[in-house]
Amino acid sequence: MSETVLTAASGKEWVIGYERPFTIIGERINPTGRKVLAEEMKSGDFSRVESDALAQVNAGAHMLDVNAGIPLADEPGLLAKSIELVQALCPDTPISIDSSIHEALEAGLEACKGRPLLNSVTGETDRLEAVLPLVKKYDCAVVAISNDETGISEDPEVRYAVAKKIVDHAADYGIKPADIVIDPLVMPIGALGQAGRQVFDILHKIRKELRCNTTCGASNISFGLPNRHGINAHFLAMAASHGMTSAIMNPLHEPEAQAIRAANVLMARDADCMAWIKQYREPPAAGSDGARGRRVSRRKRG
Image (cartoon, rainbow, N blue to C red; front, top):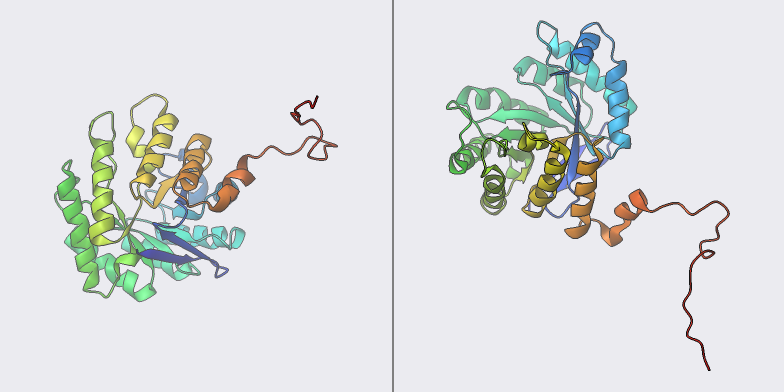
């Protein structure tokens, strides 16, 4: 099966793949909907970018998505600066360069060390012809979002067809399916009752027919519902069991992070459950030798 190989500034590799642990892509470095962060970045204050980067890595993020989409700001310059700072703080963590603006994507690619994930390309012809040459030029991987000139379809077959179009178009540039991470677009389950099942069905087709890895904006599934973390966590575990290999999400939300760790255990992606044990095993009590306090049952011999 396809494996998407990414590298951090230090040269350390991270691999997205069906037989690998589920990849958590930290979403926090994004000023969209975060007014304070947007104003700070715009004024040249990147302290929150730095703290968000460290917090996400400490919480278990395997990659960091970096976005600097602020209206009326120098997005290419802000994105390049953010990437440089994040990589200096987290040299072992690969980067996802996130922008809808061609100039910003290229500025991010110029600034980034290692082999990043470019986020993103869609099925629109002009977008394909703008972004895919960058993917080829900089030898990076790319997120392929399953919408095109017609918008986002509620029909999963249409979304699959758009994904296939992107894969086929990328092949014309010599870009392999292993370097395409498809986002099949998760719809809000509160508005579209079949949204979960649709994604699971698409994941099977992508795995079997396109042989690409997959990702999503995990929180989309619960939009408009109460107890969103509960829905998100169960969705992520189920999506992993159906073949999803990564998600753009907030690793600081423990229910979602725990669900992914559990999925890794149950899908045999956590050898000997060691990652689970390391995360959740309670430390021994002070002064304990590891055996004291245990109740040992012995059969009385008469």
